[in-house]
Amino acid sequence: MFAARPLLALDLLWVSKGRSWLRHQVPLLGSIIAGKPEFQESRIEACIDIDPATLRLPSNARTFALKVRGDSMRNAGIFEGDIVIMEFRDATHGDIVAALIDGETTLKRFVVQRGVPYLRASNPQYPDLIPAQELVIQGVLIALLRLLER
Image 1 (cartoon, one colour):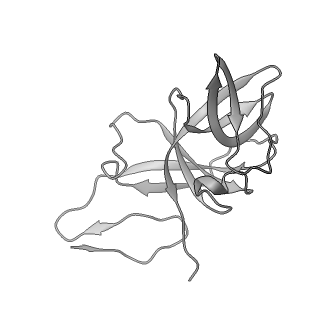
Image 2: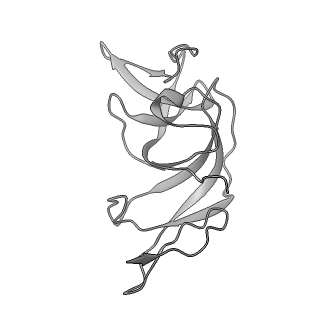
């Protein structure tokens, strides 16, 4: 049996009666737009404590978190205010990624067609984003946190 202490902001540490959990601290680096890409500076706002076994993370995983703004990923179940946990690793076709496209950041699905990579929203109101100069994958989505209103 697990007993949860009250949720305080982004403190997501669960306590087991039998043992304390190993923790992995994930820095919350601000927010990311799920919409039209925009310039964004990263800064650590907080840290989220998680159990690495729950997310099946290797001990050397490099992770970060971002708060979602916008609605371009709503059909993938990612909504405004959600927190996405990202891992620094190479993306494959179909992954949801935090990406730098032509100097601006966004959260989108990574697509490769005929060897050409681009980004696709999960909301038909947004166009595909084809890089004019650069497309840098900054992280791949591994988990989604949603805090419910009380």
